[in-house]
Length: 603
Image (tube, rainbow, N blue to C red; front, side):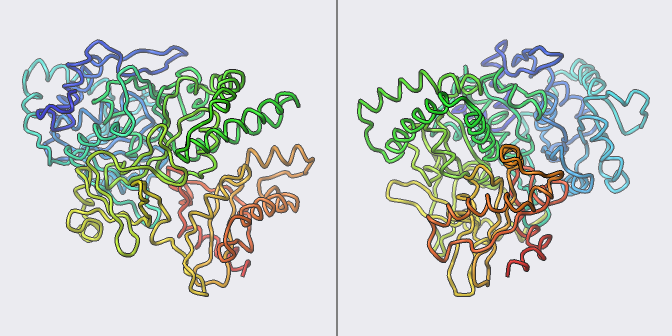
């Protein structure tokens, strides 16, 4: 495999090796005007080379940085790899970020070039153009609506490609020389963390980090060049980069770009990926959709699905307990899979899915168990940006419920005296951009201090207990891990998110964010009148429904862990309001402050 070649020590050399290997094979697909268009590895290379040569001619030097903002598409990766081929680093920006957040990344990274998707993203730059003096050019790849816009700092992606074409002819061999000058220890990408506790920090990942992870990610569950994935999580997040970029150069699978976030479920059916990856919220949505669909089915279909699910759950429980499945149960499962689950998976676009990953946040074990029951190998991965994305994953057929699996090949994990998870691997990052203090706190003697608390069992499986800073100490001195309780609550169809409160308090309370789709459906089915989302959250019957769900969870908790009071938040949580991260993690500190009155009201 190319990844073992010592020449391929940087992302650009690994990319070029992939082009040499797969050439005219399909690398990526994009849907335009209702049709899927193939992009070969040679097409990929053609665009990347022109982007890189154009940027070199415009003054992008080795060691510089350039930023990208926009939804996932081929232009995003052309820009990213083109920047890296110049020996510069890429800083991705969430497309949903407000202009102030965009300004922070562009200025903190000292970006000299800024690739933006369209007029909407260009407008964000216009808000802070005078505060980013190091920025030299802004390149727009979708210029619709900008025909009459003229600015000496702005150029179109087409103009950049044309310039690159001329430069390739004028200076043959210049790009190859620049790529050869890049060292494995040089900065490859800046990944800005979501910032659940303050402004985002720019995690600096070297070429060595990225090249190693491209290979390591498939050490627990292999991927193949005839695999297909769907690219839809933000590309500025390490989780998506693992599949769309880093492993792509190792494996050569086909990357399919979705049309838009509104078409994820439709595109899933069209593409039918063989390897799935998503944040827990996506898997929870699918689980809720299946449950709602079955609730609306005929009594006969409900009966058949109920029986099939009981068989599936019994089998999944044995497998996850590493116990043999009796031949009679396996036979029953094959029958129900053929009659029920096979058709369900086809309707969802999961029929070819060999393995699926959940990452970026904890997933409720009940959700994981459900997918295994219907025949989807959903495995949980654990890691952080600072470790280049992945520390552990479960292995197909070796999933132990409640754990996040075993370390990837080449990763060492140990537990500190206070329970903190420490990680050592070739993926441990270089440090935080312009933040030596935070770097010194995070990397000690080569070990990455994860900030998570956990344990390792006798089989080497890692269990995550909670974030170290989130552990609650009650007024009675009891240590409580809120994440465990919150995960149990999020397994409810009607609860989207939960924030457990109780630090220095006499008992635990909880802020609940309802699942709008399922609660609205419940209200309609039970003829509950409401006009706004706020009305819905305040309705007595909805509060009775949530109370019932919380009491169900309390039954499996110790007395000190039980939630005594709850309040349903009267609004949805939005990233633009600073309440959740782009990967849908609740910003606990912000919520505690913003809804302080509601919290105090429970005490």
